[in-house]
Every structure is written in C-alpha cells, then in structure tokens.
Length: 283
Image (cartoon, rainbow, N blue to C red; front, side, top):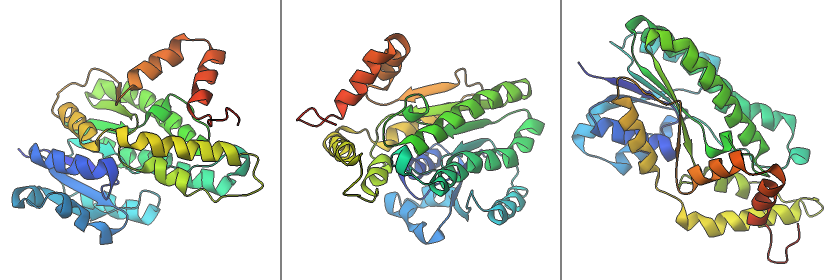
C-alpha cells in the first residue's frame, strides 16, 4: 500500500529537497506551498517522470484559517497519512528593541501556530490508524539563542516544547514525533533574514548587525547541503518506531549543544560574542 507524506513549505529550502527525497523513496508526497506560482521549483530540481507522478502540489497557507479548512477537506480523501513534515517557516531577524510586536506575531503565526494547526488536522488520522510519524523542523536555534534573531529563536524554542508534549501524548497511540535540529545549511533562511534588516544609521546595534552579516557571509560557503537533512527525514520516515525525540544535524551542532550544556554561562556568552566580534574587537 502506498505511503503518503505531507510536507509544508515545499517551495524552497529543506522542504523542496524533502519532497524530492521522499518521492525517490517511494512515498506519494503532498507538497504544500502558499504560492502556487512557485510550483515549478520542484520540477526544476528533478524532472524525472516517476518522481513528478509521486508529487502532488497543493496550495496551503498555514496562517490562513480558510486555507487550512480547505486543506482539511482535501486530506479527507486520502487513504492514509503516514508522515507529516512541518517545515513551513521563515526567519525574522532584528534586535529586540527594534523589532515591532507585529513582526513577532507574524513569526509565531507561521513557525508555531501554523505548525500546530496542521498537526491538529493530521493527528486524528494517525491516532485512529495507530501509526504514523510527525516531524517538526526545529533548528539549533531551538536550543541556543543568537543575537539579532530573537523572534526566530523564540519560535523554535516554542516548537521544542510543543513537540515534547506532543510526543508524550501520542506515544500510547503508536504515533512517532521527532524534532529535526539543523545547524547552518544552504537554505538562506538566516542570510535572507539578516540581510533584510532595514539599516538605521543611528541604531545602537549598527556595529553588531554589520558584524553578524559579515560573519554569515564568511561562513556561508561552509554550510551543509539541505539534501543531507532531507535524507535523515526519509530514514526516520521509514522506521516503524522513531526512538529519539531530537535529531541535531550539521557541522559542529552536537559540539555546540554539548558546550552549552556543560560550560558556565559567562564562558558560553564570551564564546558566542567572540564569534561575531569585529576585527577591532568592539561591539
């Protein structure tokens, strides 16, 4: 019997590669995206006829109640739902003092409430079938705070708590829940967020922003390929039982998490700030 996977945020980044890799593994993939004018990106990446036949592109805006309701009607026609990958999200960058509350709300509407809404829509099907896997795309930012990314970081921290509770609730029904915690990958999510901050000549954070942008620019050639994350998700999707809740992945991620856990906070703070400090050592 065909296995069916739903992937949100499929038009770019991790979502794009997740859809392709799942289709290669034999899944029928419901690739959702807010803007259907971007649907060509999947065929641009892989136009093999077999892969294309396994991918169905469906409109879904995870922040729009009407769009979610339409999607709920659509999934009623599916014979089963074996996998949900909550990937839709974006990174709102900026310093706490300068980010307005509306921007914080938009960040949570997509990254957190959007994830919860689609998860709620899918749970009944998996619970009744006593099987299935829900994967939530978190980030190393769900475990570690970074300056200039408080909205994004706090949304990912929220997802970590949500997934932990969800896993405990669904374990008696044999439904898996897992968090993927990628480090820096070539998805542009941080780079776009940081580059899109509107510069303010009089901002007290101007120097720190320049430092952050320079750090991301210099480090980006070393970022991993998103296909690596997609392949991990395929591996988890094929397991009957997903043993762990958290799956950190990416260059240096596990070391960062261990360091934060075991070294004193003053030393950790110094290490983080030193990574983004300008050559003249002033922020």
